[in-house]
Amino acid sequence: MPGPESINIMQKLMKEYKLFPKKKWGQNFLVDGNILNKIADSCAPSQPGYVVEIGPGLGALTRQLAKRSKGVLSIEIDKSLQEPLQEVLGDSTNTRLLFADVLKVDIESQLKTAFNLTEIPRYQVCANIPYNITTPIIFQLLEDCPNMICATLMMQKEVARRILAKPNNKEYGLLTLMISYYAEVECLMKVSHHCFYPRPEVDSSVIRITPLPDKRVQVKDEKNFKDFTKAAFQKRRKTILNICSSFFKLEKGEIEEQLNALGILPASRPENLGIQEFASIADRLA
Ligand code: SAM
Image 1 (cartoon, rainbow, N blue to C red):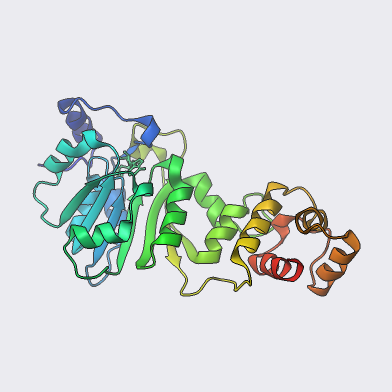
Image 2 (image 1 turned 30 degrees about the vertical axis):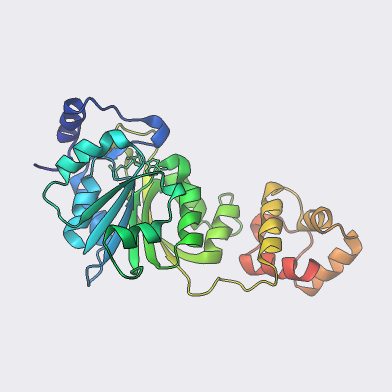
C-alpha cells in the first residue's frame, strides 16, 4: 500500500483503524513526503547500516529509512498503532517493531536482539521525537548508547535553538551546556508546522547530534561539575560570585580571588560563561 506520506492517506488510515492522534504521546505526524525524504537522506550513510527510530507513529519515516538502511528498529509506545504499522510496513523485510516506552528500554541490546546479531553494531538514530520527552531522550542517547554514531532528531524549533545557542544569549542554558559536554550539534533544516497532522502550534527543526570521542572538558569530579552547572543556571540572574558562594559555601573574598586567578569576572552571569569556565570553577572550588 502507499505510505502515509500525505494527509489524505494518513487520515484514511486513522479512520480505518479508528485511531485518533494522542496528545499525551506527542502524536503530530509528519505528512510531507519531501521533508520525510530529506530527513531520511540526511542520515543515509554511504554504506547502509542500522537505524533506530523512536516513535514510528504510522510508519511514514520508517518506510523511508528502511529503503536506505540495512535494518531499522522502531520503538513505539502506542500499541494501538501495531496493526496499521504492520500494514504500512508490510513490504519491507528489514524493519523490526518494538512496542515499549523508549525511556525504559536498553536500546542497544534491543537492536542486537531484533536483528539476531552477535554484537551491538554501530548505528544511527533518526526520529521525529515526541516533544514532551525531548530532553530525557537526548540524554538517554548520550549517556547510555555508546555505539550510536549520531542522532538526527526533529524537535520543536525553540528547543533546537536552546540546544544550539551560544554564550551571551538568553537561550543559552543548562541544556546547551550539557549537550555540548557530550556532543557536537548542527541544525540540518527547519520544518514548518504546516507539514504535520494534526498541526502543532510551533515550527520544528531537525538537528544532528554527534557524540564526541571524549567529553568536551575533563573534570575531576563529574557529579560536582554537573551539580554546580545546574545550580548556576537555576539562578541565572545572579552573579557567578554569589552562585559560587552559596554552592561551595566559601567566603566571597576567597571566591573572588580564585575567580580572578581563573580569569573569570566575578560579576559574570552564568550565560556569559562557556563550558571550560564552568569546568575550571568546579574543579578549583570543590
Ligand atoms: N515518526 C512519526 C512521524 O514522523 O510521523 C510519528 C512522530 S510523533 C511526533 C512521536 C511518536 O512517538 C508517536 O508515534 C508517539 O506515540 C511515540 N512516542 C511517544 N512517547 C514515546 C515513548 N516514551 N516511547 C516510544 N515512543 C513514544
